[in-house]
Structures are given as structure tokens and as C-alpha cells.
Length: 273
Ligand SMILES: NC(=O)C1=CN([C@@H]2O[C@H](COP(=O)(O)OP(=O)(O)OC[C@H]3O[C@@H](n4cnc5c(N)ncnc54)[C@H](O)[C@@H]3O)[C@@H](O)[C@H]2O)C=CC1
Ligand SMILES: O=C([O-])CC(=O)C(=O)O
Image (cartoon, rainbow, N blue to C red):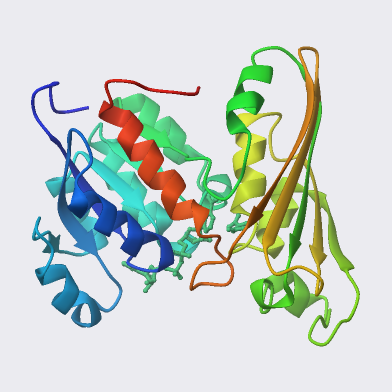
């Protein structure tokens, strides 16, 4: 990172939706060692008012400009723009925090780019649970890793897998398994829903060996993720039941996970892997 311990790292946020807005507000309220310098939005005029009232008065710039003005860029945007946000950051040896993790599978060279230039890509635990244990187990041998996701119908509508296979979930009265396969295929079919599957796979045994089940479940109101891991050090299963944010596809805890991740960057006491 560019700054030394006494200098604040400059942070920018790309995308002012459910996650980005909360992250911007938290940065504005103050996170140890960090300062908010810029934000980027698809419709800047919609955000000019409240952004101008922030204490830190960040600049509103395009996603391509973020890497020039910040040391850390937090991507909270749709997966299709991840490359445009992350490539210039890591090419400058800076840090990108990536939420649209699924996009990393279509852009695997971004990690190579970061390696070549001394940059870093950070994937927070986000909507999931237990990536501390998965990364630890992966130092040894993980035999199997599985994710079972259940979402209310509203959190899944419009997913390409449903549209392409003509799977109708509106009006179902019982849980319906709508996908079973690898994490790689899960995120192709559900790009706005299954970032967590890719995060689990990158922490553990990769997108082809990580198994995923997705259920449309009219009996739940929360986005529910259960991970099951068997390894030579431990066997564990963990479940998280996320209250949806104003974006029904996204759990409220996701923004909090990003804020916790940013706090860890310069905190005097750091808990967890
Ligand atoms: N890793 C994880 O655990 C999770 C990841 N996500 C992912 O995080 C991303 C953000 O999620 P949300 O905030 O819920 O989405 P959202 O749809 O509420 O917000 C995305 C924002 O990005 C803006 N945007 C679009 N194109 C842009 C551009 N070219 N420049 C600047 N801004 C642009 C949109 O206008 C929108 O305001 C999504 O890709 C989502 O799938 C969501 C939940 C959990
Ligand atoms: O449950 C959530 O908050 C969203 C989600 O699964 C994802 O994007 O991976």
C-alpha cells in the first residue's frame, strides 16, 4: 500500500447501491487510518445532493478515474464493470476490495495483474460465513466443500438460469431446488446471487470442485447460506440467515462485512484470520 502508518490511506467506492451507500456513510463517519476521497455512480446526478453533504466531501468521478485518486478502491457495482474498476487499481500496485466476486472467474488474469504489479485483491466474507475456517482448512487438505443457498422468490427473479431454462418460480408454494452443480456454473446462472459460492470456492478447493445447491423457497424471508466442509483438520457446517437489504438479492450484513474488512486494514487490534 502507498501510505505509511502515519498517513491515512485514501479510499474510493465504486457503485452507490445497497452496499456502496452504507460503506460510504461508514467511511464518512470515520474508520481508523482511512479517508474517503472519491465515489463513482452510474447516474451521478442522482447522488450529487447527499454526497455533497458528507463531511469528507468525496469527489464524484468515473470508475476509470478512481485508481488515480485512491489507494484502495471498493467495488460495489454490477459484475459487468468489475474489470474496468479493478484492472487500473491493481496495475498501479494498489488494493481493490471486490464484492462481485463471481466476475473474478471470467477475469482470472486480474489476479496475475495484481501479482505482477504488487497490487492486491481483497474479497471480504460478504454475505457468507466461515471463510476464516475455510482458508485455514485449505492450508491442509479439504476433501469436500458445499454451499446450499435458499432465497425467497423475490431474491432470485430474473436470474439467467431461470430465464434460459424457462423455470417459473413466481407463485410456488413449496421449496424448489432450481440448481445443483459447480460454483463456476452457479455464478454463471445466478450472477447477482451466487457471489458467495465463488468466494467459498476461492477460499477452499476452487470453482469446479465446490458443489452448490440453490433453492427458491417461499417459506423463508431471509437469504440463507449453509456451508459444509470436510477436511483433514476439521469438519464444519455453518449457516447464516441474512435479512435482505433494500436490494432483495443482497443481505444487509454484506455492507457490514465490507466495513469490518476496511476497519481491519489499519486497526491496532485485529481479530480473526
Ligand atoms: N460478495 C458478496 O457476498 C456479495 C456480493 N454482492 C454483489 O455486490 C455487488 C453490489 O451489490 P448491491 O450494492 O446490492 O447492488 P446494487 O444494484 O444495489 O448497486 C450497484 C450500483 O452500482 C451502480 N453502477 C452500475 N454501473 C456503474 C458504473 N459504470 N459506474 C458506477 N456505478 C455503477 C448502479 O447504479 C447501482 O447503484 C453486486 O454485484 C452484487 O451481486 C451482493 C451481495 C453479497
Ligand atoms: O445473500 C446475499 O446477500 C447475496 C448473495 O448471496 C451473493 O451475492 O452471493
